Image (cartoon, rainbow, N blue to C red; front, side, top):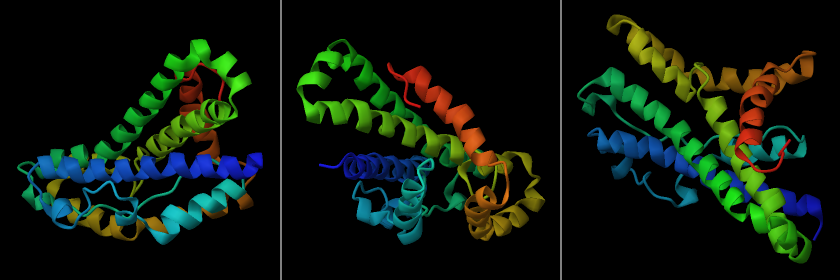
Length: 226
């Protein structure tokens, strides 16, 4: 099979659990804090179809793969109601950072598997083509995709998860303004992500991703990823 096709297959297999578990983690954190919204809407499911957003889950990652850009995207946001939280401010932060934490855990799992297999990897790579693709393509992609999603989502920019920190920093009387801005921030963010790299000689997102996710991946993985 063509290496490019296998690369796309491995990318999809790495990307789907990364975003599904990211969203489930948001909903599970909210549920543990007393909010049943995600559970009642069926969003604590591991079924990827429950979380698919046509653009963010399918079209955007495919565009980035074809452009050989860092792969990231998003699923349908898990609904939650902070009115259920005993402390709305800390609840927002916990729910917001649960998704990136799930991505970090997945990256750590992929790295652990790679280190466990590392002593026997050279021989198996030579004798087993499926293992070679698994070890040299899927595992690095799985670690990278999860680190990309984590590092991208912790940016303190609405509507990304990192912006939940504002729930602690902004005075209560102004929180409604932040939530109103958050509702309309995604289209603006997507325009910046897709347009800036083509009109500017500097792509700040790629530089940030390479400096954070790229370097962290190379520290976690037994062989150099990028």
